Picture (cartoon, rainbow, N blue to C red):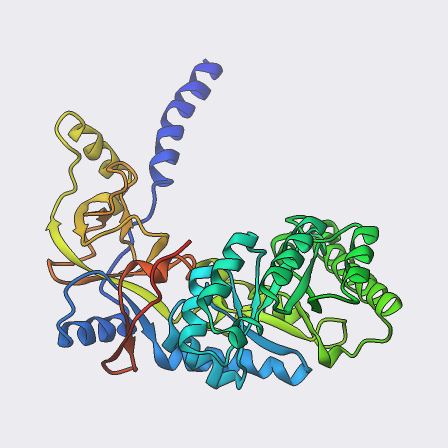
Length: 420
């Protein structure tokens, strides 16, 4: 009898516990910030999916990032993360810096054709054919200012040949593997040979670039992050010592000694070898950059898209409708259905709370089906706001960026043509 009572109790308790473990119902109207932004878009007659830049938030972020220059570290804006000339102009003005890091030939050419005074360091090595085409397209004096990133002895030889063929001196920056293990010089013999070869000839050594993104990605557990940081600094210091041994005493302020990115730039306090950091995404703070070191920054870019259709009850297509009823019984946040203009972006819903893409219906770039609880009262032409996970690809998907000045849509900024 005792065993029967135990089994009966379990038979009752387990379903009750499971029922109590259901997701709680969430949702409601837009937060005041997004309600104001939605009204500004409607007042401007915007009726399609678009990407909005919050100008006051952008300026506040740029000021907070710019304060890092007090450590003695220069700031270099990352073009791939902010692929819009007007946006890059805002950064250059806020940081009083013409320095840019570029990542593909198309964007480099577009930037330098429009802003020939910008000082470009490449953030990844280009195939020599891409470098040749870019140099051919740019005025000679502009192309001569580019710092080409070199990661191997073989690429160094290719660029030397290109410089000789063109009869043009080229600046080169040597990529260091400071622990990320995504390429660059790691072997000291190879690095030494590369530095020795730059004593003479048509290639001019301009400095080092050591990207340390892995430091922020590693957990604190077992001291992994601290150890990675220590090793990255030691690798950079060893390369610097080698350069001074082989080329004679070098002045840090005469070279480009680049490091970091948005997640790690605040780790660099000017006491190491590097003299500048690259920052791009932090200016807009997309979702993937919610990091403790960036906690004082605010999201400044949002996708705004109209609701096209709204249903009081979410239903899967015929043949699977029963599954949507089952899902709603378990999760009340799948009660309502919505279809938005566009979708399947690298982004997550920011407002209203409780709206989410339907995992049962599947993704769509045309009319993404969303679900929500009955607490969400969105009607056709209302907005759903999403926060991009990153900026570098997402900003190129909507045409002109719309600029929100805190009250209204006050400008449209063209983005650069799409490129990989």
